[in-house]
Length: 269
Image 1 (cartoon, rainbow, N blue to C red):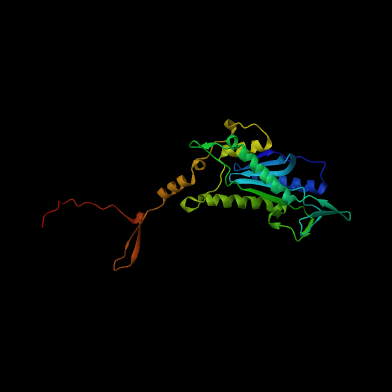
Image 2 (cartoon, rainbow, N blue to C red):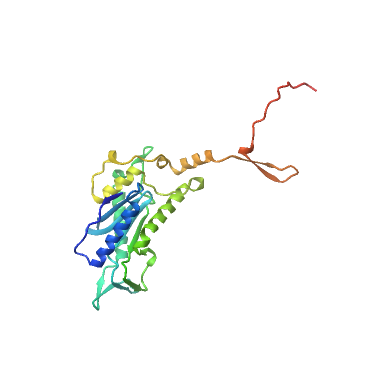
């Protein structure tokens, strides 16, 4: 689902805007029809009384991804002190460190969500859900034909636009696998459908109307412990015995047939 569409910003460099539009198009193509993903473009996050523009935010059932696509263009160098400069017509112009900035954005967003948890997250069995364990991932999209070099760069979250949707999908499937793995899964944060839409509306500043949101799917209302009990009851029973002549053996439940009582009465010997 696309909550807010991409909009052109005339105050940015044409290369940055072209890269941002490309990312928005790829996100729309990949996730517009999915009920598990909500896309927000051009969001504003308050960071220490300063409004910071977030080019794209992807919310999914297991977390949030903040994406910057308007910063990494042209020729950029980073030194060992994490000082960033962009070369423009032969001049080195200092620029703000986007990785440090987005760390503050992530913290500010998390603090704001926690502060309003009762408004955003619903209760389960009378107990208020929390944002404990909510993953907020940061991704920076490098524009085509741009150069990024230096010793102080953490390139683990710097991608090209072509890699973005596959990376988000891979992370989503990784979290989903943890929930559904054997023995009830790990303790993974998870939005139910209505909470996911409420969180998206809260981020963009819309009013929260839960009656308009999708209801939770049956498997979303179960805790990990309950899921484990369901799976345990569905798991085939295995009875261990011994083979004829000694040694361990295994008889599966599907091979066991109920015994038949003899129609003849037992006669005393």
